[in-house]
Amino acid sequence: MKPKPQKNQGKINKKQAANTGKSSQRQNPNFKHKFKPKKEATEKKPNKPEIRKMIRQKKAAEAEAERQKIKQEKEERIKAYKKQRLEKTKVISKRTQRGQPLMKDRMQLLLKQIEEMKRH
Image 1 (cartoon, rainbow, N blue to C red):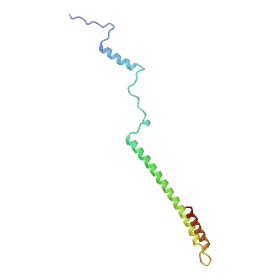
Image 2 (cartoon, rainbow, N blue to C red; image 1 turned 90 degrees about the vertical axis):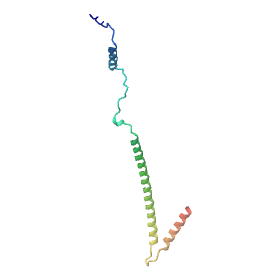
Image 3 (spheres, rainbow, N blue to C red; image 1 turned 90 degrees about the horizontal axis):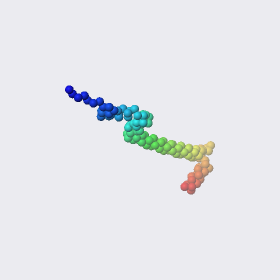
Image 4 (tube, one colour; image 1 turned 135 degrees about the horizontal axis):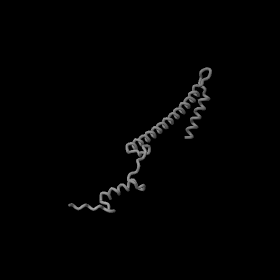
């Protein structure tokens, strides 16, 4: 007859000890997670191509703003020149009833031009 194996009284074999340790960690409320929970899609950090694209868009917007500013200034200079030219044309084109040019207005225009040259 074979001898009967002894029952472990209060002792735990190796397999049972390994299983109990894992299960106790799962049940432990203070167990720290190794991995952080995933962030929402809205808080996603942009990757390098997206960053480069954003930088390009920002530079393009700045360049467009600069072009608009230059264009606006150019239009203002053109308007001022056209206004000045119109005034000069009006003064020069004045005539008497017989068709002779009015020299009084022309002399005032010349005087005004000389004063502007002295200022500069």
